[in-house]
Image (cartoon, one colour):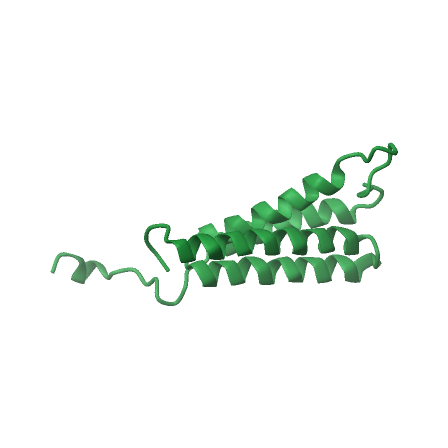
Length: 127
């Protein structure tokens, strides 16, 4: 799916944005629930989302849509509620590890090359 933005591609990107919102919201809530396992589970879910977006769209744009949804979930969950408390507390290092780990996974998946993106050998480039 390389090329211009078609209606099908826009629908896939919006679906990835929604999946990023859901995965990010669930991940942010699970990180502090189980001490090391929640962080690993949340990062594994993000890796699946980002890699699936990369494969579905064929470019880093799919990763960007999922990452945007994931980050929007963080922004929405970190805003103080009317009662004065936060839904996401920064009590442990897990939240920061999830933020940094998710950003690293997004960059890794966005810069991956598929097996079909082989460079043209220099000897054949001029022919």
